[in-house]
Image (cartoon, rainbow, N blue to C red; front, side):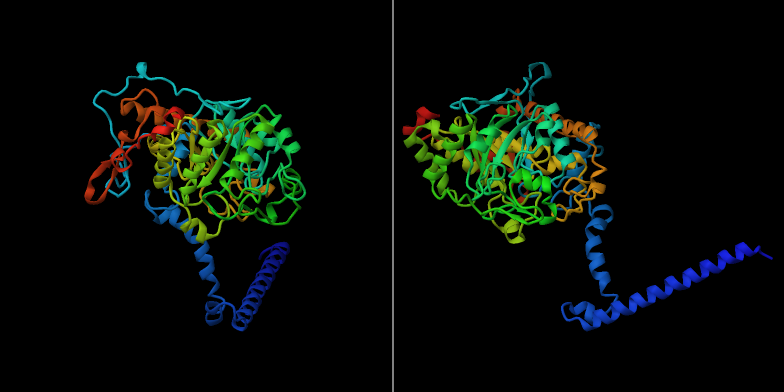
Length: 503
C-alpha cells in the first residue's frame, strides 16, 4: 500500500493531466471553429486545424534543407561550402580539404585562375601596398587592406555586432562602413577606420526637413577615425528604393542617432532629392569634400550605364580634382536587409557584368587611376575577391561574409528582429550569445585569412601581390566545357587620345 502523500501526489498529477487534455481539446475545437468560419485562407477553411501544419512546415523547411537535405554546393544565397570556409577562416582553423574539389568547375561562369609554371616564391612576394584615396583632399586616406567591411547600419544590426566588427576591423587594419544608419558610439569604441555613408535620408547629418546639415557633417568629420564619406545613390538589395528599417528596430537610442521617431518604420527616399543630374551630383560631392576635407565617393548599383560616361565627360570639363574619390559598385542581387523581392531578384546588374563595364569606361576616359573602384555583393571567398581584383576592382567590401564570421547561420530572419545569433536583432536575450571580445577576433581572423589566401592565388599566377592581378590571370567557363580568358571576354580598351594625360 502506497503512503498517503504519494497517493495524493498521483491524484494531483492525474487531475492536472486531465485538465491539460481538456484544455488541449478545447483549444482544438476553438481553432477548428475559427478555421472553418474564416474566408482568408482556403487551405485552413477546407482542412481546419491540420491546415496550420503547412505554415509550420514551410517555416521549418529552410532549416531542414540546410542541415539534412541540401548538398554542400546547392543552397542559396550562400551554400554550405562557402559558409564553412568563412567559419573556418574566422576560427583560424585549417581550411584544407581532402579528396578533391566538390565545386562544379564545368558550370558556365565558373572561375579558373591561370597558374604559371614559375609561381612567385614566398621570399619574392611583397605585402599588398597601401593605396592612397583622395589625392586632391586636405586629408587623403591611406587604405591598408583591399578587403573591408561593407555598409551595415546600427539599427539593422545590433550593438554587440557593431562593436565586434569595429574591434575586429581595428585588429585587421581594414575599414568599416557605417551603412546609411549614421555613426554610433560603438563604431568609434572599437577603434576601426570608418567610412561614413550618407544615405538618401541623411541619417546623422540631417536637418528637420531631411536636407543635409553641414554643421553635423563637420562634427562627424572631426572624428579622426572617420576617414572617408560615401554618398549612397542605390544599393543591391533595393536599387531604385530607399532603405527600410522596421519600427520594432527603431529604439530610442537608434532614433536619437539617426534623427527619427522612436518605434516608427524608417523609410528613406529612393534618391537624394537635391541630386537630379550629373552636375548636381558633382556639386554635392564637392560640398561634402569641402566641408569635411576628406575623400568622398559614391555607391551605386549599375543598371543604365550611359550616365557613367556623362559623369566622366563632366569631370574632364571641371578638372579631374572634381571627380568622386572612389566609386563603390554594388551587385544587383540583394544584401542583408529587408527588400522587396521584385527589386532584389530582377533589378540591377550583377558584378560579373557591371564591374568590367565600369572599369573599361574609366580606362577609356583616363580616370581609372584617379577613381579607384570598390565592389560589394556576395564576394565572401578568396576566389570571388581575386576575380574582382582581376576584373578591375581596387578594393572589395563584404557584409554577409563578416556576418558569417560573427556566427550568422543564414536563418533568413534579418528583417524580423528575431535573429537567433543576435546579429540583426535588438532583443537583449538573443544578443547574449554575441560576445564582442570573442567575435572581434573572428572578424579579424576572417579578414586576415582572406587577404592571405588571395595572396596565395596571386602568387600561383606569378604576381608578387594581389593588386597586380589582371584579367589574363583568370578564365571563365563557357558552354561545352571550354573556358575563355577574361581578357578575351572583356578586352582592355584604349584610353581616348584627348584624355590620356589624366590616366
